[in-house]
Length: 190
Image 1: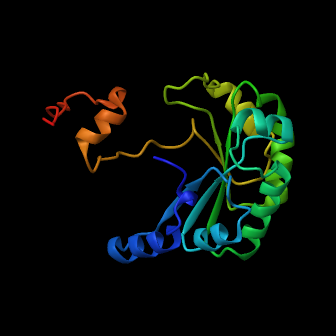
Image 2: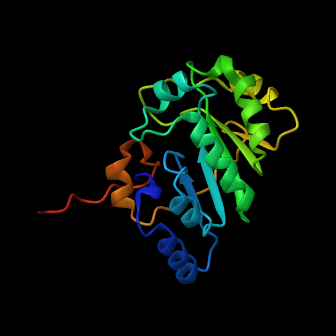
C-alpha cells in the first residue's frame, strides 16, 4: 500500500480499472501532492476521492503528517478547494483524530465547512499502530463540532464483509486479520 498520487499513470490506471471492472473507482489520498495540477487532473478521473486532512495549523500538520514534500497546510487546503471546484465526483474529507489534535476539532470543522466536501469522515486509528485510538465517546464529542456537515465516523460506519482477493497476501501483511476458521496458506518455497 502506498500513496496513489505518486503513480505517474494514476489517471490511466483509474480509467483502466473502471473499464475492466465496470465499477466505480475510489482513491484515498494523503493529500500531500494534491497541490500539483497533474495530480488533480488524474484524481478527477475517479468517481470518489477521499482527501486526508488531519490538522488545522502548520505546526500540527508537520508534526502529525511529517510531509516529505515542501507544501504547506495552506497550500494543501487551497489545492483541495481548487480540486473541489472542478471535480464532478464525490469528494470526502477524511480527518483522523488522535490525542494530538482532538482538542482542535472546532478549528478542523471550520476548515471542513470552508471546503464543503460531499462528506466528512471522522476517523481514529483502529488498526494496530504507534498511536492509540480515541474512544467512541471522544469521537462522538468531536462529531458534534461539525454540526450540519454530512459526517460519518469510524464508530458509526457499518463494517462491510470483505473477501480478500489473495488470502495469503492479506494474512502476510496483516497477521492479526486472521478471522476464525480461516487457515493460513502454507509459506511459499523460494
